[in-house]
Image (cartoon, rainbow over all chains, first blue to last red; front, top):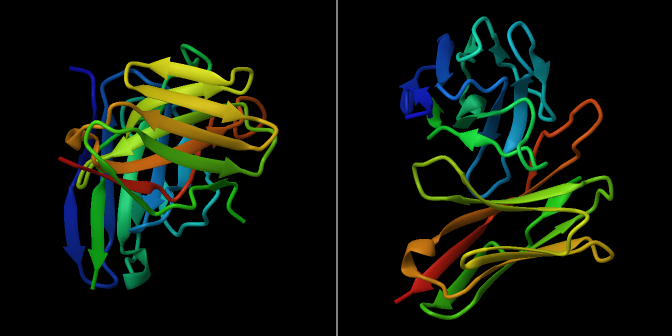
Length: 116
Length: 115
């Protein structure tokens, strides 16, 4: 079944650690995204990619970095985690050419990061 | 400044009645609007969308209305069911230009449908 997977679902780590949040999709989508969401707040776009070797920064400035070496894989890395990075990170993907006009994103279940 | 606004953080409705969730936007360049539903500990799932050239789109119990002059859209759920209890996000996008298709989200409205 085509889907989008995020690991880990939950992560608690100490300040200064390096972390990588994994995101993989089996739908063959060209576009992939990372959104950050705090409770009761909107989803903020922090990174997106149009395809392999393409990465762009989103509307919200983030200290994280991303890479897109394979179509299906879009990992997010924090070199040195801080308590301010505590949040939920949502990965999403969409096809290059929307079927009916709207760019419908398919989301993963999210990774909830807590930095102590 | 928020481009997509959902001013009601929560809404409580009786089962079987209509739920109306509202959304306002400020950017007149938006040409697509989407609604997503999110359960706790899950990612948002797509519900319904509408193009700016339409004023209504219907899919089963869900109908979205768009009033371009007021920069306002609403999602109607009829009849409401307890399983509809979730957070509903309004999102908008511009389908052309440098950030084509990237969705901008509101803060969400938590809907509770009581049996």
